[in-house]
Structure formats: structure tokens, C-alpha cells
Length: 433
Image 1 (tube, rainbow, N blue to C red):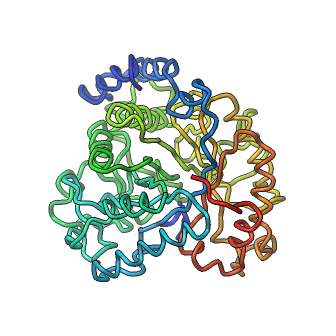
Image 2: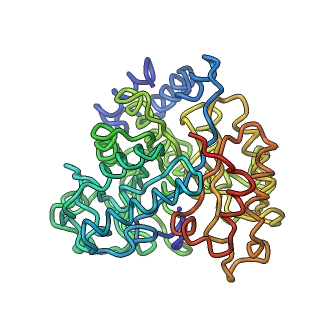
Image 3: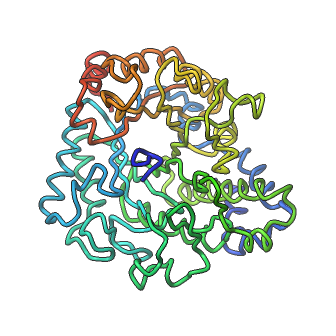
């Protein structure tokens, strides 16, 4: 979701095909790409999540999404530091929920699997080090269970935010606890850019990360499953992501490695969506990608931008297709730029995403860079407390936009420039659930 901003730190036939893939191993079954295409074709014919079902039933009454990201990686937002007592951690968490209510928000997106670890008693992965300072150490309470209970008590929705592939913010597997799945399965892991990642090209990895995430869905009354912008890692100049062996084994039938990588991420999305709906149909599935799918210089369907990264080409995430084919319930692109920025104009991108989402039944929420407001290192536009309020005013001209999510909780509470207070005064005059 940053550096340490964001980036630093199916039912029916489609469901049956998804079960075939996960049970039999997608790579072996999909050497010519035919199974992947079959999943895509089948999924395109299914109802497109709860948003579409509600609209087809004539239910247009759901209120706007007013969300805040609550990041736990490197103790970005919460806990304020590792090693606090259980009572202090709980008090801080409840404080963030109370602040969300005070700001008239209605959804908290809590990061519960930041680095292949867990903020609940998971049978798959160790307790997160960001709680106690020691990976695998029981914090003495259940943060996710408490968050769900306390959020719902306050009328807030709780979306559980997972990072599928990031394992560690370093490259030394020996620093992981001995029972960590990445240590038990060293062939799953790729060091890249100073971090460790699970290899998305391995079917056993895909199945494992789905199982690890779905454990929380089964255990808790969460309202949503949320992913951010991490799929394949952001490119690092002069370095290659070493998936040669996996590509040699599973890449037959694809035009090139990039197509194969995109198919791997597509499968993760399709399978996870199907498994969520089979387990708890009421749980929404949403993704918050980097805000530029492709520049129009790369693809005439792309946005009139000159962004240095493109999700399709650099992260191998075909975010536009996921919306057009209804693979998710909502998409929340991170439009972390000001209105009028030449390389990536907020106004241009809101309009582009509105057109992409139109008629799909997928809800479009906009990710907002509250963390930039009042930061002296940011351009002049972000020194104006009214910049974010203008974002919401502009977005309301576009029918597909059904809400916003603010990065992140620390800034919602601190509000150093008054930008959040201005949003609340101008746009959130009453609570909406």
C-alpha cells in the first residue's frame, strides 16, 4: 500500500473448474492455457458477486463506502510499536475504531496478514512479529476476533486485508521461525529487492496462500476480504525475479513469461473469489491496486497518463479485466495523486476507472492519499487542506464511484493539515452504514 506508504511496506461451472485446478494442480493441468481460459470463460457467465446480485434485484440502497486502511506492517498504524501489552494493544485498536466513528466512516480495512504471518491464531502461519516483536509469539489475545466484535459493536464493517505473496522485509530465511512454511518449503521462496516473496508461479504456493487466508474467513464474521497492490513485486532496476524453474515447468502454452505470470495472478483471483462465495457468500471480495492499469502509450485502452509503473506490465495484474468481467465485488484503485498532476492526473484516472466499471456490477471505490496531505515533502497541491475534499467533489460526478478509502489510520487520527476534517465537514455530514 508504500515505501512506507502503501507500496513500501463462483459458483456453478466456474466453481467446479476452480476445484479441479486446486485439487489437481493448475500448472500440470494448464500447460497449454486451455484450463485457464475455461475458468475465465466460465467465470464470465456467473453472477458477478454480491454487488451485481443486489442491483439485479433492484437494491440500490446500500450507502457509500467510507473506509480507512489500518496498516500493521512495520507498526505503520497499529500497534504503535511491537511489544505492548495485550491491554495496550487492544486499547489502541479500539481507539482507531472510535476515531473512524468520529470521522463518520463506516469501514475499517485491517491488515491481518502483512508478511506471511497472522493476527489471529492461524494453523497455517505464525503470529505476526508486529504484535510482540518476536515472530510466532502468542500475544495473549485475538486481535482479529476482537476487531470484528468491536467494529460491529460500533456499526463499522471490518474488511480483513491480506498480502498474498510477501514473506519478509529481508532476504534471510534463517530469520523466520523454524516452523515457518517458507523455511519448511524453501523452494517456494524467491529473494528479490531486499525482500522474500512466495513464488506465484507454483500451484502449491497458490493453494497454500488461499488456505491461509480462507482460514480467517471461516473463523470470523468479517465483512470483506481485501488485497492491496502486491502481486508480483514492483520492479527493481537491475534485478530479475527468479522464477525460471517454475516457468520451465508450467509455462508451456503461454505466449511469453509475462502472459504466464498474469495467468498465475488471474488464477489466484478467480479461485479465491470462488472459494469465498462457496464458504460465505455474504463476504465481499475487493482489491486495491496501484491506480494505473496501463498508460495509453502502451495500450489504446489505457489511461492518458505517463505513470512509471503499470499493473498489467510490471505487477502482472490485469486489473481492468477483473472489473470488466466481474471477478471482484469491488475495486479500490490507489489514486494517490493530486488533481492536475501531468503524469497521473487524479481527474483523468477517476474518469477512466468510472468508464471501466460502468455496467459491470463491480463497485468502484477510490483510494485516497491522506498521508500526503500537509507533508512538506509533497507538491504544493498537498499543502492545501481542501485538496482531498475536491477529490470527493470531483468523484461524485461519476456514477460508478460509490465511495472512498483513506490511507491511513494514523493520518485519520492526527490530521496534521486538517484535510480529513475538511472532508468530513464537506461530505460526511452524517453517518452512513
